[in-house]
Image 1 (cartoon, rainbow, N blue to C red):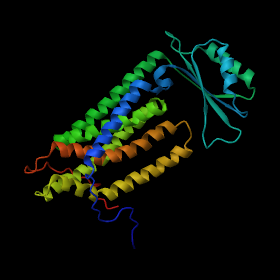
Image 2 (cartoon, rainbow, N blue to C red; image 1 turned 120 degrees about the vertical axis):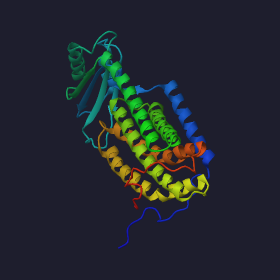
Image 3 (tube, rainbow, N blue to C red; image 1 turned 60 degrees about the vertical axis):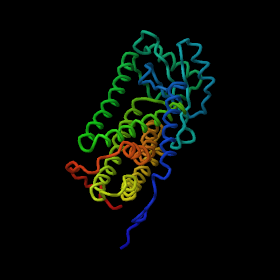
Image 4 (cartoon, helix red, strand yellow; image 1 turned 30 degrees about the vertical axis):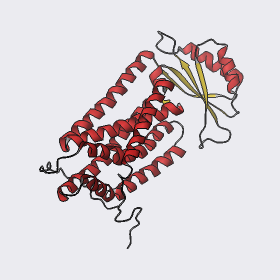
Length: 322
């Protein structure tokens, strides 16, 4: 019985033919992402800014201008109103999200203010329903920002330490540079398109770290084996051979992951769309960086060829023939 193959059993693609171009493109994307952060900033959600978010639903078409006019009369400070679109919504399901920023020194929007907002919107649309109300104080939001930063730093430091123990230090540097590349570009996309950035996105970024390093470690394992097997083969050729040998596994793993994430992205609803998009984009950029960033960094730093390799801890996933 023949098995379906997405990639031929043996390939000889020269992944390092455009080494300078791919590494340069990665550098440009990282710089552009950093500039997007600095110039445009991130569209922080209620988790990081503090305030209250009210989610509404109505059977009538939304008149956002009327909503804004009704709330402007209340003089409650900064108000942001956006309509939520989702392919899973019915023809008579119209959803809006209203964000009220907490005033300086206030822990959250008061219950009286929320009641006044709901009354004003009911006067505009008697069919409106308030399906969710979330409040976060400024103090809590500040603590969440620092907790998110520390979580990212701790995860990166732990990965660096693990790779350093398991492989050579050159592998650790290549892996961490690739991870930073993935995170910076992903967050840069959020800044460029002003996608809401909240705690769910932080969870997605941490998931990217784990997924990307898993793919990188699999290729590193095979590279270490090939360095022992082909002692006189040039480093560049050994790396090309390694990537070609693990290409089938990479395509199948990333492809099946993207199929599941794609379904969630389309049909999962707007509540988890930001989280799903983060992982979806992260899988793509992480697969790219495993080959064109991590391996380029290791190739640039060089590896000792004459020393006895470290004891292999055994990776049952490195030899999967997909």
